[in-house]
Length: 274
Image (cartoon, rainbow, N blue to C red):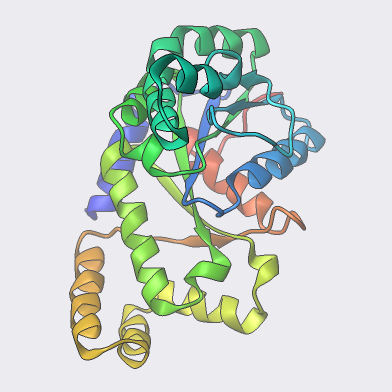
């Protein structure tokens, strides 16, 4: 049995299931990958589909969001207050704010209970390290709800159209998986900003590791090429390369495929009952 299948099956089996359960979807990715815009578009798409959906903003440093959060961590944590009270700069305040979210999990859960959604979209902090690589991130992921959860990991299409960036992003996704240990769905975001040829190339890299190795060899130095070859082999051996779903929050392209992947992970393909 493949390691990826076993881990996903184990995570799936340990969590509460059923069509009446709430699906919790953590939207994760590097800064600029389009997390908030996807949260906005996906929320509206799900509402149009008749689903009872709510959005939780988990970024205490967000200044402008393209959607109205149903639950908002900024109601509980104020960056400017932290800067003033603890004499911290903006970056230090963001780090402290990310850690303080854990102290407010019960209030967030109350907000979720009041909204009572069938699908909860969690828009995580813009800087991925503030969520995935602080102790607070895994704690929040584990304790925000006891119902089925998954992580949408966004690959920024304009960024990963270069092979070295692609493999770097793949390893970042793997690192996030080892931290959060939740079933993970890979989404190639912002495909409206790349050409069809570039999209086909990224897809081919994801499906054919030999072609990826050749592209890396052509685009990098001998030392980089050797390192990347070892990295690709490591990802292949651990089955951490998986389907990459192309999507656009601007055009809604691919959202139906993202939704299908979520229902397969969270309930074996059954949609939540609106």
